[in-house]
Amino acid sequence: MKTFKKYIDEAYNDMSKDVKGRVPTDDLHRFASDSSALNKLNTWIGDIADREHISVQAAMEQLYRKVEQIGIEFDPTLDEEVGDSGSKDLPITQYGGRIGKDESGDDIEDDFISAKGPDLKMHVEWERLPTKMFKVVAEIK
Image (cartoon, rainbow, N blue to C red; front, side, top):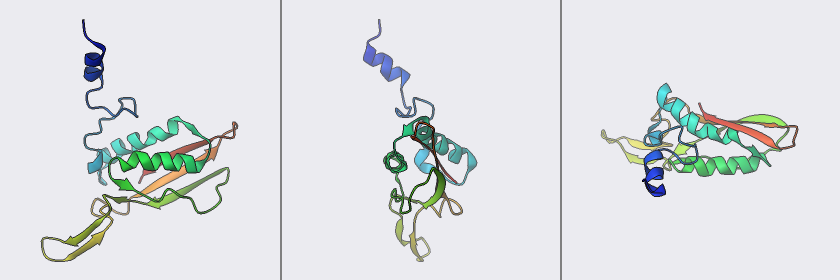
C-alpha cells in the first residue's frame, strides 16, 4: 500500500500548487511574445479570477506576490480612486531589468521584458459584484 506522502509526490510532481495542477510552472519565467508561452503564463496568472476580493488593492497585492515567484515585478498600488469597475495597464519588469553591455559593447538598460516582445504590460480589470466584493482579472498582453 502507498503512503500518503508517496501518493502526493506522484500526483503533484511538478505542478503549481496554487493553480491546482492545471499548468506546469517549469518554463513560465521564459515567457515571450510567443503566443503559446504567453497563453500558459496568462492561465497561471488568471487563477486570481477564481476568487472574490474585499478590495482591488488586496487583489493587486496577491497578484504581485504570485508573479514575483517568476521574477515579474510591477507597482501594485493604484493611485486613483477605484470605482465599481475599471481597468489599468501596468508596466512590468522581469528580474529587476538589465544593466550592462551586450556582446557588441553597446550599453543595455531596459526592463528585460522589451527583449522578449513588443510592449508587454500587465492588464488588470476589476468589477464590483452584487455582494460588494470585487472580481479581478489579470493578464499580460
